[in-house]
Image (cartoon, rainbow, N blue to C red; front, top):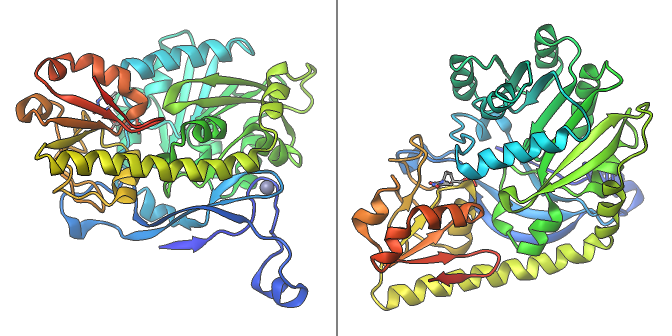
Length: 420
Ligand code: TMP
Ligand code: ZN
C-alpha cells in the first residue's frame, strides 16, 4: 500500500543513504523525525461501510536538515489514494474571493490569454478564468469523476496524472501556453524532478509563467495546523526548498504572493531562467523570513501536541457534563484531528458537510457519520467543532441561528476556542 521515503525531494539530501550505501560507508545522512501521528487511515477515504476502507499507513513527518523541507516518511500508492476521489473544490464565497485575488496577482506578472491547469479538479478555477477574460482553458486531472464533471460543464479536461502524455494532450489544445497553474497539487507529487521535466515541455514561450500554489509551511507552523499532515500531502513547502529544487532546472522563482486560503498559502510564480527581468523582491523577503525553519518545525511539533490535548479535553469535559457534540466540515483535516485525538461516534455524533458526495458516508477510522448541514439545526447539539476551521468565519456567519438557539462553536486551530 505504501513505500518508505527517506531522502529530500527538494535538495536530494540523503539520496545516497540506501541500505547498501549505509552498509558500506556507514550512516551519514538521514532525514530527521519531527512529528509522529501514528498509524492513520487515508484522510479522504469516505466510504459507506467500514469494511470498504482502503486501510492504514504510518503518518510521520520528517525534515531535511539541509533545506528544511518537511516531508512524509511514506508514499502511499497513488492508485489507492486517488481511487474514487471525493474531493471537490469548495464552491464557497471564500474560494470565489480567493480565485479573484489569485488571478489579480497573476496579472501583476502577465496578462494570460490562455491557461492550462494541472490538477484542475472539476474545472472550477478554469471556469472562473474563462469568465474573467482568459480566452482558452484546458485542464488535467487524474480523477475520472471530476474530469467528467468538468467536461460536462464545457471545461475541456484530460484524465490522468501530469506527465508527458497529458502535457502533449494539453498542448494539442493550447500549443504555446502563457500560463500553467497547479493549485494545491504540487505537495501531492512524489517525483518533483519529473514534474519539472514535464513542465519544461509546456514552457516553449519566453513569457511562460507557471504558478504553483501550496499551503505555506510558515503559516502551518504559526498555526500549529498539524491537521494538514495527511497521506496526500507528501511535502510541506517553503520558498527556500523550491529554490533548491529549481537549481538544476531551466526555471527560477520570479515572485511569491501570499493568501489567507487554506490557513495560509503561497503562489510561487516561476519563469524560465532566460526571462530578462530580475525576481520580484517578494522572493528574497520570503527566503529571509524562512531563516532557521528547521528550529521552527521543532516548535511546530510541540504546538501540535498541545492543540490535540486542548480539543480532547474540551470534548471530554463536554461529554462528562452530558452535553452533545457534533463536527462541522468533513474535510481531510477532520480525519486527521479525529484520529489523532482518538474520537469515535460516542464522542462526536455526526459531522455536517455541504458536499453531497460525502453525505451518508463515514469518516475514516472514527466511523462518525457525515450528514447534511441542516442537521445542525435539526439536532441542535450543544457544541459543534469546526474542523473546516479555514472556513470558520463563513460557517459561523451562515449559521447565526445555531448560536441564537444556544449552540456553541469550538474552533480548534490556531488556539482551541469556544464561541460565543
Ligand atoms: P477543505 O478545507 O478541504 O476545502 O474542506 C472543507 C470541507 O468543509 C468540505 O468538505 C466542505 C465543507 N464545508 C461545509 O460543509 N460548509 C461550508 O460552509 C464550507 C465553507 C465548507
Ligand atoms: Zn532538502
